[in-house]
Amino acid sequence: MSDDLRAQLSHLVQEEDPYRTLDSLESVVVRAYLTNQGYGAPAEGGPRSIEGWVAWVGQHSSVS
Image (cartoon, rainbow, N blue to C red; front, side):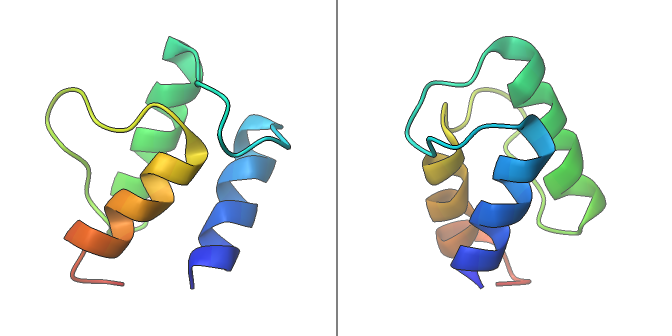
C-alpha cells in the first residue's frame, strides 16, 4: 500500500524525490488528494514531503 501511495503522490506533484520538501501548492494538492481518497489529513501543518505523508497515512489512517 505505501509503495502505491508513494507512486500516486509522486505522479500527482511530478516529483521523483519523495524526501524533497514540498512547496505550499504541492502540499495543498497532496492534502486534497488524501482527503478525497478517504485518508484524511491533519487540520493544519502535517508532513512536508511525500515520504512524510506516506508515513503519516500509515500511522493515522483507518483506510490503511
